[in-house]
Length: 175
Image (cartoon, rainbow, N blue to C red):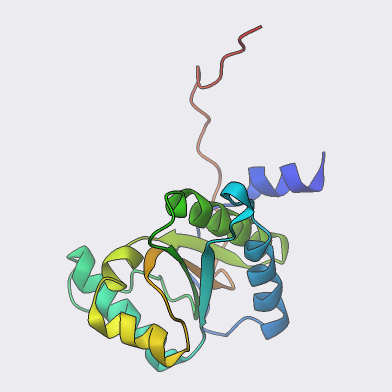
């Protein structure tokens, strides 16, 4: 079977990570894969903020937990040590589609490197706040950005989850 298709079929969302940080070279490859995602009209409207600082990662987790309405202490990133946040130009009509493709590429790349990942929402709500807009400004990121998603990445703690059975009647040929 083709290796790309094999990775697509095998990749799963991971909900338990080991605490050690993935190698920077692996994170760089995952980010590069995201940057090569298809984008409408070739605009490349999405950016990635790689959070590897534990203190900032934990703060984002607390804020994400609050936005999601979970009990204090729940980690919506399931212990993943690295968070790759995808944002896209707020003024680009295809921002969500473009950013979603970046997320998909990064999750497949993580799997192909032996790492686990999961897409976590609420980036939009986070980056609507002044606090997270100021974070972008401190990083030298100008412009208006909409959070698309968090790609939580790390070494999985446990076995790769089994796939759910595929539902029937989800494709149709118009011949």
